[in-house]
Length: 75
Image 1: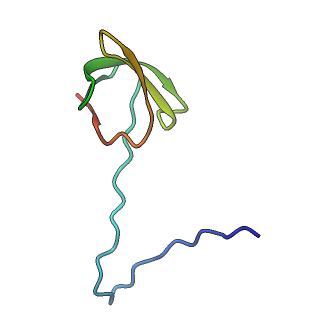
Image 2: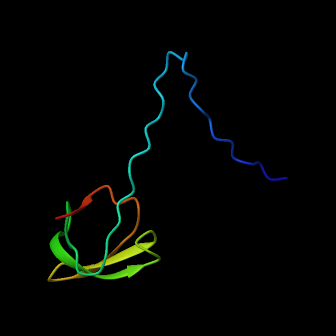
Protein backbone atom coordinates (compact mmCIF):
# COMPACT_ATOMS: atom_id res chain seq x y z
CA UNK A 1 0.00 0.00 0.00
CA UNK A 2 1.18 3.47 -0.75
CA UNK A 3 0.12 6.49 1.16
CA UNK A 4 -1.02 9.53 -0.72
CA UNK A 5 0.47 12.76 0.46
CA UNK A 6 -2.22 15.12 1.64
CA UNK A 7 -1.55 18.83 1.68
CA UNK A 8 -2.45 20.46 4.95
CA UNK A 9 -4.26 23.68 4.51
CA UNK A 10 -4.19 26.42 7.09
CA UNK A 11 -7.49 27.37 8.60
CA UNK A 12 -8.15 31.10 9.00
CA UNK A 13 -9.01 30.60 12.69
CA UNK A 14 -5.89 28.58 13.47
CA UNK A 15 -3.53 30.03 16.10
CA UNK A 16 -0.55 28.63 14.17
CA UNK A 17 1.04 30.45 11.27
CA UNK A 18 0.59 28.96 7.83
CA UNK A 19 3.73 27.74 6.09
CA UNK A 20 4.99 30.18 3.53
CA UNK A 21 6.47 28.43 0.55
CA UNK A 22 9.71 30.07 -0.52
CA UNK A 23 10.01 30.85 -4.22
CA UNK A 24 12.13 28.39 -6.17
CA UNK A 25 15.45 29.59 -7.51
CA UNK A 26 15.94 29.24 -11.25
CA UNK A 27 19.29 29.51 -12.99
CA UNK A 28 20.15 29.75 -16.69
CA UNK A 29 23.36 29.21 -18.64
CA UNK A 30 25.49 32.34 -18.38
CA UNK A 31 24.11 33.52 -15.03
CA UNK A 32 26.80 34.73 -12.64
CA UNK A 33 26.32 33.07 -9.27
CA UNK A 34 27.93 33.10 -5.87
CA UNK A 35 28.17 30.09 -3.57
CA UNK A 36 28.99 30.29 0.13
CA UNK A 37 31.57 27.47 -0.09
CA UNK A 38 32.99 27.70 -3.64
CA UNK A 39 32.85 31.43 -4.41
CA UNK A 40 31.95 33.23 -7.67
CA UNK A 41 31.44 31.74 -11.11
CA UNK A 42 29.22 31.51 -14.19
CA UNK A 43 26.64 28.77 -14.71
CA UNK A 44 27.92 26.73 -17.67
CA UNK A 45 25.23 24.06 -17.74
CA UNK A 46 21.69 23.51 -16.57
CA UNK A 47 19.85 20.18 -16.45
CA UNK A 48 16.10 19.86 -16.24
CA UNK A 49 15.03 23.50 -16.41
CA UNK A 50 17.36 24.32 -13.47
CA UNK A 51 15.36 22.06 -11.16
CA UNK A 52 17.79 19.11 -11.21
CA UNK A 53 21.42 20.29 -11.46
CA UNK A 54 23.34 23.48 -12.22
CA UNK A 55 26.94 23.10 -13.39
CA UNK A 56 29.09 26.05 -12.30
CA UNK A 57 32.71 26.87 -13.19
CA UNK A 58 34.37 28.33 -10.08
CA UNK A 59 37.74 28.83 -11.77
CA UNK A 60 39.81 26.12 -10.10
CA UNK A 61 36.97 23.57 -10.11
CA UNK A 62 33.63 22.79 -11.70
CA UNK A 63 30.83 21.78 -9.38
CA UNK A 64 27.42 20.23 -9.94
CA UNK A 65 25.08 21.99 -7.53
CA UNK A 66 21.79 20.25 -6.71
CA UNK A 67 18.68 21.67 -5.04
CA UNK A 68 18.00 23.07 -2.57
CA UNK A 69 20.09 26.03 -3.67
CA UNK A 70 20.17 27.49 -0.16
CA UNK A 71 23.80 28.62 -0.37
CA UNK A 72 23.83 29.73 -4.03
CA UNK A 73 22.58 33.12 -5.22
CA UNK A 74 22.25 34.75 -8.63
CA UNK A 75 24.12 38.03 -9.00
